[in-house]
Image 1 (spheres, helix red, strand yellow):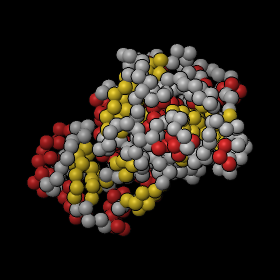
Image 2: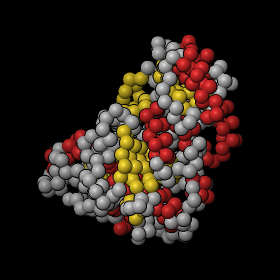
Image 3: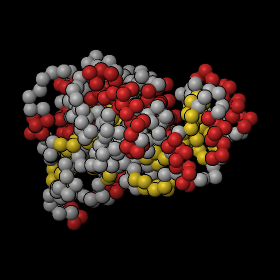
Image 4: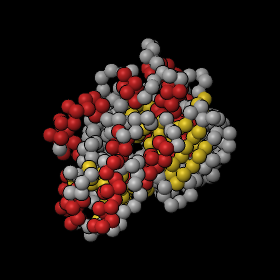
Amino acid sequence: MGTVNLWLLDRLEVRQPSRLDLILEVEPQAAPEVRLSLSSVIGLTQDLIMGRFIPLRAAPAQLGLLADIPGVRTVSYNAPIGIPAMGISDPLLGTRPFSLEVSRAPTVPALPLGLSMGIQASRMIVIPTSESRQVLMPPGNSTLQMVVGVVDTGMTPGFPGLPPSIPTRLMSFTGEPPMDGMGHGMWCSACAFGAARSTPWGRIQGVATVEAPGLLLHAKALSNIGFGSTVGILKAMEWCVDQGAVVVSMSLGGELQGSVDEDPLCRAIEINPQTLFVVAAGNSGPEAWTIGSPAASPFAITVGAYGLTDQQVSWFSSRGPSGAFYRDNPQIWQQDLAKYGERLMKPDILAPGGGRALQETQPDEQLLSSVSGWYDLADDLIPNGLGKMKGSSMATPHAAGLLALALERGIIRGRDDVRARFGQKDQASGWGLITWPRLASEAVAGGASTSRQQTQTVRI
């Protein structure tokens, strides 16, 4: 017998929308019978995702009926998912912010530093990704010959940072072409798996670089304005898994729907242990209980943002121990904590994400990588294919690239091996900054301090 999420019912009592976009999770063996039942009662079923998720539309009055269909495990909401620093209006959640904070400070490389477009000197620290990756201490040979994926706003193959020599495969789940008209997806793909490139601020470089017979997948599940849905993300994750992705980077998120045993994105990560999903913690810090979905999954590797200048967790990085649902339901939190233990406590690790330890601290810290689309113009007002950003969105591809290298070289075998390398967590930084020596269980003296001394920053 299925259950309707308490999270969903609580929201419905407030807003009472006339129609709901829903997701049913069914037991895989029961899927044909459930679809038959739905066709006679609801009349509008769609794709079966991962063999168990069925998207459909229904009236609120039909929720109880859906939960009574044999084989239905949970009924969830097809919630909005996204990354841009703006809000959207949602029939259940109202207006809420998403997780990416983008630099709006315009700079022009041709002008002397400190004189660009009215920006005062020492307002911003720009760190190219070739330098932020040094903090991770990756191995000297950082090429990959495995299948890896990114779920984001798309990718533009052949663009600087992702040249034709990098084998790629694209798919869109938004109704738009798979190319990135925004820039966020390009930034993340180039940071995790892109090639080296010279810029006026110094070289940018992916943590790892994919070469044949390896393959870089990009599933466009967020539109060119950064919006998507739970169903679109589920389809993108399924495609990456079906294509054989060993590691998937996901710099996106939304509200946690119920417990991690009910939330569909958390469930999708749990049922696909062959793929390591590396997920952004979010940018709703420094308050506690601000982890989103699917970052709250005990089976994801959840990444918070680390500031290189301060060598601390960035002020905006979301804090644990989990999401707001668990804060508001302490009994369920205690039950799930007893079930999953430390795996439920988030974030797991930190990686370079820009920003500072205190919100008011100046100058700010931004990381530079390749972009295409309107972020290219929004950042510099000229189409130079470069973008400066900060956020847990930026930390996630750093960690994904390093974990892919560790998997291919046999340092780790999967998500449980990552946890075996570290000690006790805290709700701000998890196990702390991830580095190659830590993954390899080697003692490091100086760690991030040594890397910071090697990092040359540019102030503008």
